[in-house]
Length: 62
Image (cartoon, helix red, strand yellow):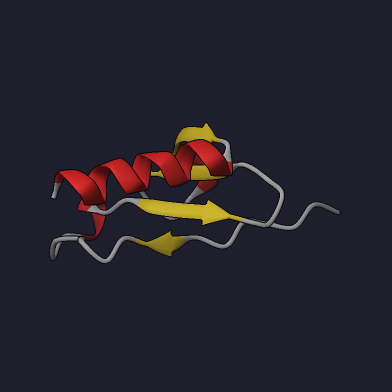
């Protein structure tokens, strides 16, 4: 049996639930990004290192 991912909602969501980005990551696995907390609507899957680089670049650009 495969464990279902646990999704975390972005802290920068607007009031509309459908305007949020959700992220799911588990140690040693891919980071998954979706436009809602439903893996059927997966938008992106990437490595944890690439996700960390992306977040650092976003934070740096302000």
